[in-house]
Amino acid sequence: MYQQLTLEDIQNNTVLKKTWDFVCSMHHGQYRKGTNKQGECVPYTSHLFRVMEITANALGNPHLILQNNKLTQFLVIALTHDTIEDTKVNSKLKLAEALIPIVGKYYSIQLAHVVKELSNPPEGFSGKTRQEKDENKKIWQVEHAQIMSTPAKIIKMADQICNTIDCVDLQMSHKKNTDSAWSNDKKKAYIDKAFTVCKACMCHTEHISDVQKKALAFLMNLATQAHDYALLKIQHPHDSEKTFFEQLNATSLPENEPLYLCKQYPSTHQTNHFNFIRTHT
Image 1 (cartoon, helix red, strand yellow):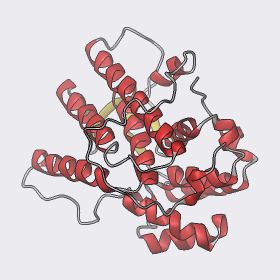
Image 2 (tube, rainbow, N blue to C red):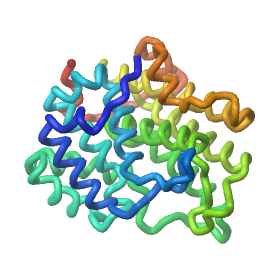
Image 3 (spheres, one colour):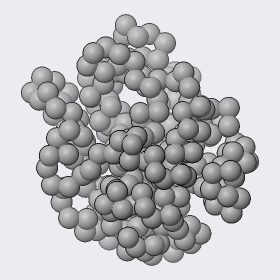
Image 4 (cartoon, one colour):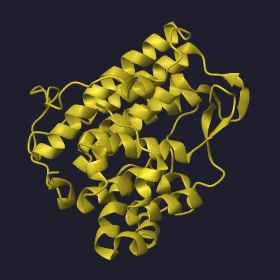
C-alpha cells in the first residue's frame, strides 16, 4: 500500500531535516504553475516533498527507508533534484559544497552529480517558437533519460509521476499569465511526454541490483496508473473529489515485480557508483 509522509515523519532524521530546511531556503518564494482547489498558490517545496515520498515508496516501506542511513542519502537527491536548475545553487560544485554539512564530503559529491544529471542544460533548448522549444526539450529528455545513472532514472520517474498528477489535480496556468488556463490538448501533450520519459528510463536496466529493479518496476506501475488517471481526469474532471494520492492511500498497489523490464529495450552494461542504493531494507 502506498504510504503518504508528513513533515513530522522526517523530523527525527537529522539528514532529511537539514536537507528540507536547505531546500525550503533555496526555493523560498517559488510556486507551482497551478493553484489548488481553493485557488491558492502551491509552494514549490510541496513538489520536492512529493517526489521524495514517491521515491521512498518505490524503495520499500517509506517509514523503514527513513531509518536506513544509506537509502536516506537517496532521498536527499529527491529533495534537491531541482536545486541546480531552479536556485542560485546552480552548479554541481555549489551544490556539493552546500551538502557537505548535511551528508559529508564523500556523499555530497556523489549526490550533486546525480542532481546535475537531473537538470536541464543551462543553455536551454533551441527553437523559434515555444512549440519548437518544447518539442526539442522532449527529444532531449527522452534521449537523456535512457543514458542516466539508475539513481537519476528513479528520481526522474518519481518527478514525472508527480508532474503528471499535478497537471490535472491543480488548476494549471501559463507561467506569465495566470488567467490563461492550460487547454486539454496541452495537458494531454504534457502527460504523454512525462509517460514517454518514464518509459525511456526503463532502457538499459538489465545489469542493476534487485533493489533498483524493484524500484523501477514500482515506478513504472505507478506511472501507468498516473497516466491513466490523468487522461480520465481530463475527460471527466468532476467524477471524483479525491486526488490521485488520496485514492492511492486507500488502495493496494500491484506487487513490485519487474514486470516492465521488457527485453525489447537495448542491453548494455551500466556501471553504478552509488553503493548506498544497494542496501536491502
